[in-house]
Amino acid sequence: MKISCWILIFWLLLCILASGSLSIDNFNQAFPIIEPDPGHTKLRLSSEGLEAIKRITNPIAAVSVIGPYRSGKSFLLNQLLSLSCYEGFGVGHMRDTKTKGIWVWGTPLELDINGVKTSVFYLDTEGFESIGKSNVYDDRIFALATVLSSVIIYNLPETIREADISRLSFAVELAEEFYGRVKGQDVAFEPAKLLWLIQRDFLQGKSVQQMVNEALQHVPNSDGNKNIDQVNQIRDSLAIMGDNSTAFSLPQPHLQRTKLCDMKDGELDPIYVKKREQLKELVASIIRPKIVQGKSLNGKEFVAFLEQILEALNKGEIPSTGSLVEVFNKGILERCLKLYSEMMAKLRLPLPEKSLQNVHESSKGKTMKSFDEQHFGRHHAKRSVMQLDEEIEKVYKNFIMANEYQSAKLCEALYTRCEDRMDQLQVLRLPSMAKFNAGFLQCNQSFERECVGPSKANYENRMIKMMGKSKSSFIKEYNHRLFNWLVAFSLVMVVVGRFIIKFILIEIGAWILFIFLETYTRMFWSAESLYYNPVWHFIVATWETLVYSPILDLDRWAIPLGFVVVILVVYWRCYGGRKNGSRWLLPLYNNHKGGTDRPRTD
Image 1: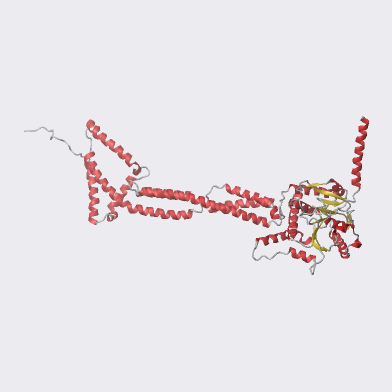
Image 2: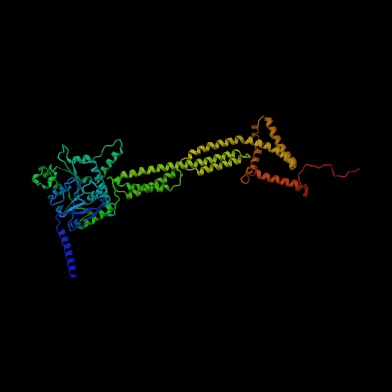
């Protein structure tokens, strides 16, 4: 039993080795080198095709045919390799893609290029725009072929469409980006030779080269239309391949296209056969070995380069829709815009306009630097840079509006506070010009210090008008209120001096003040004339000194101090005079009743 098991295992290993050796020995067939994953979103390597390439020790050159699905790419490759459909690449006649991923013909053509024996591989790529695939998959196939090939044959039926130009532009930008990324330094993309192959029967006066040149010319845009700018930007992206492109026309081989694989050369259109041979010669004349970092690649080096490129492509954040470098940069643009917004959001508004602008310029510079380090398409990302600049300016305008709002809100609150303060100073219990001026200055300084931002100038003008009006109103009422207050004060002091504290000098002073105020105004018929009298100025100065100073504000403490004085006077009248007797140095009123105590004499 044990012997039977060992025999079975031996036969299985032998079958596996035999089948492996058979596949490796038969290289005269097509092999897949790149295959799609089940979701058609990423690519993976296929070992069979890589083995066919690894065995080559000569410098390698690759010719890729790219184009829409069902455009005859596989049939064209068989014609270039002089193979029938049954010998070469599989040709599909149904309305779906026959080739999946990228395939290579296992036996290279040996050419002598400038004295160097070169092995030329032909690559068949999966057609784009087929049903059931995402654009991201087409982009990867297109870009990978662009990086790997020495010659790209862009197979297009009938004519060149704008979508074909856009797709090629994006592929060149994408290939340039990942070519530089794999090499680990910012090195310009090494472009492949581009051959525009237009399959059509009638050109009617124009050569295909003229048609290609016209299709790639800038569109006049005197009105500055953004859509036309974008069209011209796409054409600028192809500048890297401008000197490496050529055009060729190839008529249809036969009207019955589904039977082409069963036809010999004698059955095909003679013009097609002639043009096909010319195409072979043209391709052979423009082939050059693939150069990476200044040296040509052999089989193993070419496979290693392919592995690096594929890894970079699969890790890249390639968009699922669109084919332009601006769309490709959309995610990076959004991240950089978010970075700018986060830096600006740290500001505490409001700020002076100059400060806000300085922070904006600093944040914008950092954002642009970040975008420059990340964006794809090193030479032709001007449109994306312009778009990022426009978006940053939009966000900055929002911050300007927010700064204006916060500035207006803050300055309005400070203005209202000063306005209330001025109103309070207008109705002081004890009118004081010194106190008004101190409050006026304090309010003005606090406004000047705390009000910031673009609304400051406007509110400063409002403050000047409001405070000027308040000061004018206060000065206008000041002398009149002070006059009335002094008249009342003189009468009160007459009563206090005579009946409460009975101090004759206080009463006399109060009467003098009262008589001066009343007689002067009667003599000159108006109170206003009093305000120019030097005596009045002396009275005002004395009043200001008593009423307000940095140490004592009588307007605030008048009532408490008056209350304390009343208590002291009452205490003195009730208790102090009885215990200690009178000790006034100045004469007091004599209030004896019943006459003198002096003894009578004869």
